[in-house]
Length: 411
Image (cartoon, rainbow, N blue to C red; front, side, top):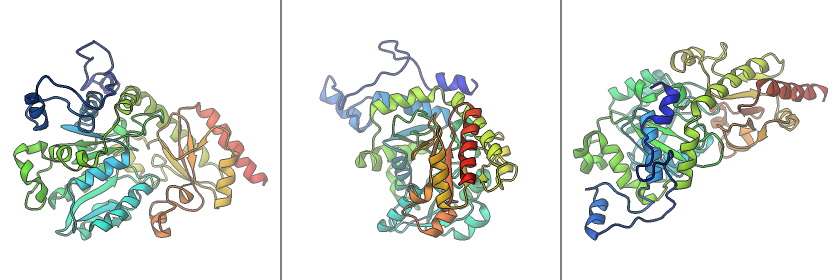
């Protein structure tokens, strides 16, 4: 099946009980069974079934299966948010004394999370560029994970995933890739060597900005050394399913960051049109970036522009597309605010992946807790505006940004 057909049919069948073409919303807390013997088997993973929605739910299970199939993984675990998915993907393998190597150009919330992990004895080393030359000198016996966003948000740097994965595996380290901004429409990170893939499915998978959610997909390819990853000892017998089994039976279940059935349903609806939306979003983003790049005093950052240092990787890995986010620098914070206030179509909101164009000033919002050094490393300056491009008619977006910039000149 090609991509848009796969979105509708891969890993999914109509509801067997009723024939419903979408898995219904099982909005219940618990599931009753005919005997205590059956419930005992479900709790002990000896028979399939549902007991409590914090642990598993049919609506959520259906969404997980579809995402796992789409990303070429062996299974997926859905979470209450993208940040919960990032957190659980890491804490499933880390313990006090461990170290992580991560890209500096991460989403502000993820950077804050790595700061929080310091209180638990987990140290993160940031690299300016997620490449082998910068990563390898930082690898030690304590390094237990390499983490990166495939397309940095908002730095818009692209990871040379194949070479970074090869380096990680030579040292027996898993590569965890946050592919939220790349989306499965542009790339399947597992194909290039990623071991764990994370999505904030609130974004492009959902597509309408109506449900917070996250999902973790396991490739099943990483061989967990139980001497190095001691928590995997009791799951070793499960082979390639060890990571997922440990996650479901441990940290994820006990923290309670489960996805609500209603949100899983909304994500499933959004998933089916993701291919069409992302195609339009990427087209709009490229055209808007090219248009804004003609304005003097406006500095544009977008990976699919030939001037971007990541242009060749966008061609190689992403089919020439650069995703649906671009950033511009307006010259000062005051000019950035004025430009945003002059816009009529985009909404000023802290989200990406919506069908509507959204703008935000990252330095004063999502990076407000970051140091100046971390802001710069993430491509965030006082005059930076992040634009999450929507599906509006591109001529309308061009006209709106044009009048907003022209007003700046008048002032």
